Image (cartoon, rainbow, N blue to C red; front, side, top):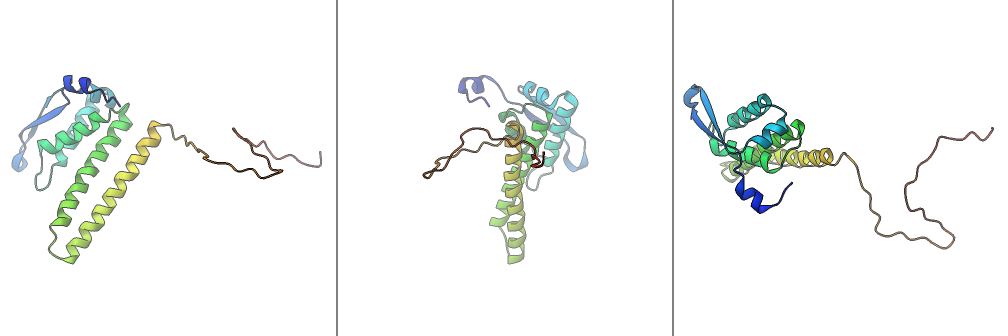
Length: 177
């Protein structure tokens, strides 16, 4: 990911504007900004268009479609600089989960009874855990699933031995041969 402020200021991130779509009408989506990164990451314009359409239908609290909510999803995916279609789609899912996590947090703040509170709390908890799992998945995907174990301190007692480096075991040796 690039953290160059000058690069961010000169590039206009992708955004949408909606025309129509209210009360079951046809929704037209207008695109603005630099969409090149997302089109390249998704692999083709068809997948990019599907991602934008799905983000548009995500809507927001009490709204079937919401350009601001859609732009938040696109902005998140764009800012995370996906490298391939799998990352782009996972990041879009993460943005949707994040958006719904905040909707559940809002709902939890406005509960009228214990039953509503319990339902909102369970949903919020599941969404937050899902986002954490998605972050771990993204991290493993980006780093090839390699795990690094770092040993901070090794104590070797008198007469003991320590091995530093990679250790591999061959197959079992038959003692009879």
